[in-house]
Image (cartoon, rainbow, N blue to C red):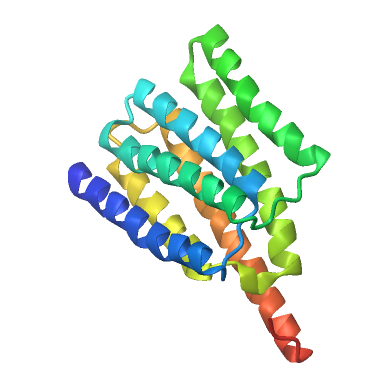
Length: 196
């Protein structure tokens, strides 16, 4: 059954990312480049930490997301989406990179996952800021599918621990929070007759 949950999570990864990437290529969605760079780094590192913590097949959707997220970061940069970078954005990137020595020093994937989950959540900062200002530039369906995908990834885990569950659970909650902000802002702007 874990294998089936893993396959569903992988399928949802493709289902979520395909229209998101298409909308970037069309210029409809304009992702924040630094959020996606941070997410690519943290997701790839968490994938290896989950493997180290015996996450098994449940870690594979996270690894796949890491690769696709790196591609989206590349698209965000080359398509000149939102490349405004603040000092706080640089801080998030440095924190993501500092998690590697922490994992190496402690030899425990838990600390890397805890740090990276925090950094990944903070990585939502630039996107939340942009989504609040420009709610029509974000794709709600993508974040919804991503939240559901993470739930299936949790079900697919072969070993449950903080190191294996924390990241997908926290990211699901962050995606739902982003959806709530976008929906709220679109309704608010709609009531005022402002459409993008």
